Image 1 (spheres, helix red, strand yellow):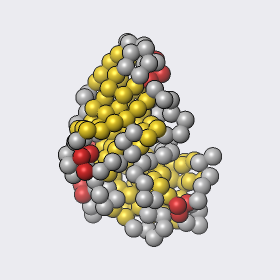
Image 2 (spheres, one colour):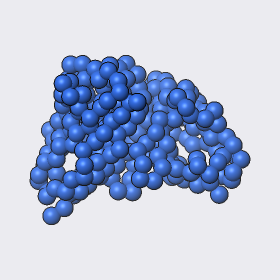
Image 3 (cartoon, chains in turn orange, green):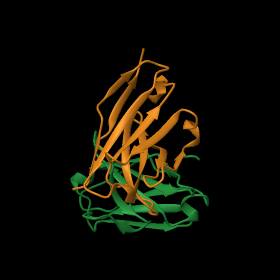
Image 4 (spheres, one colour):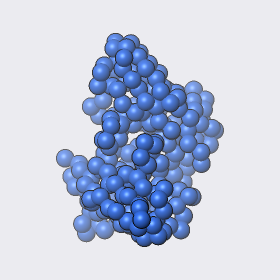
Length: 119
Length: 110
């Protein structure tokens, strides 16, 4: 079955970087893009960006421009999200989700990765 | 891009129907038919329920339906059941491989 399995929880100091992985299985990796969405404690979902697994094209939400990089490794069917210059308000659960090429829905989602930014 | 507007909370008794609205602008909800809805139980990942305004995702009960009029999309749940109690989020495509989420609605089954 289709699965997206994310890396484990992280604790980071302010100013540091974090890299979260999303290992996929059960489908043809390059037929679906990957989106990243985060959820701060007690808050709603926030779209962060999208990456094409075909050619690496990306589009990031404006608020993350300059701090966010999404990449993929087609040899391991894994997507990565790196967020730099972390602040306390980056504390959140980060989700990856599969997005079919040319369609506009996300399914399924990874289990989420809690990133805590604290000194 | 501002978050789409949803009511903070809605409630209903078992067996009743409820509707959750999702209001955007002509740049998102009103400008295309790419609205989807997600259900999220506490401490769980979101689950796709409805896509392209009114299409049910695989395995989703027919009690869930979606619609749209102008800049407002709606999710209706009929025959409410206890397991429907969750948070619900809408999202809309905004063009150029970008999306915006609604603020979320907490559904309470009384």
